[in-house]
Image 1 (cartoon, rainbow, N blue to C red):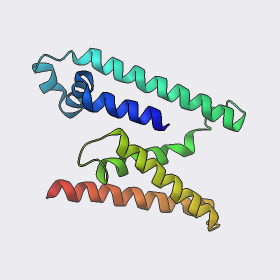
Image 2 (image 1 turned 45 degrees about the vertical axis):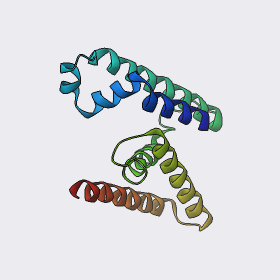
Image 3 (image 1 turned 180 degrees about the horizontal axis):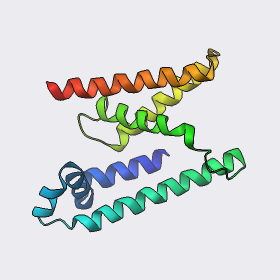
Image 4 (image 1 turned 90 degrees about the horizontal axis):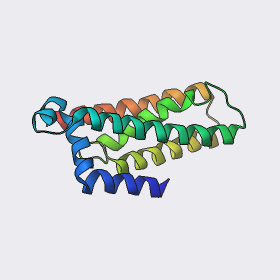
Amino acid sequence: MIVVVLVVHLFLTYTKHGRYMYMIGGNREAAALSGIPVSKYRLLAYLVSALFAAIGGIILAARVMSAEVNSGGPYLMDAVAAAFIGYSVFGAGKPNALGTFVGAVLIGILQNGLIMLSVPYYAMDIVKGSVLALALALTYYKRRQ
C-alpha cells in the first residue's frame, strides 16, 4: 500500500499528466480551454480508479473468503472520511495521495481503538461520522480564511 501511495503521489505531483488531472478536477472547462484533452484524461482516471477498486475487491474477497456483493459496504464511510481528513488536515487545501493515506491510517487507528474499548458497533459509526463532520468543518473553516 505504501508503494502504491508513493507511486500515485509521484505521478500526480511530478508529471505533466498528473498536473493535468489536478487541473481537470479543479475546473474542467478551463482545462479544456487551455488545450488539455479532458475526455481522455477523465477516461484514464476512471480506468485507474476501476483498477484500484478491482484490486481492493479481490483483496477483500480473499480476506472474507466470500464474493458477497455488499461485503465492502461498511468501508464506504471509512474511505470518504479518510479522503476528507487527508484533504482538510494534511492536504493543504487540495486532494493528495499522502494525505489520504494518513487519513486512512488515522481512521484505522480510531476503529481499532474503539474495538479495544468494546464500543458497540452502532456507536462506531457515530464516532466515525463525528470525525468526518469535524474534517468537513475544518475544510470549510480553512476555505473561509
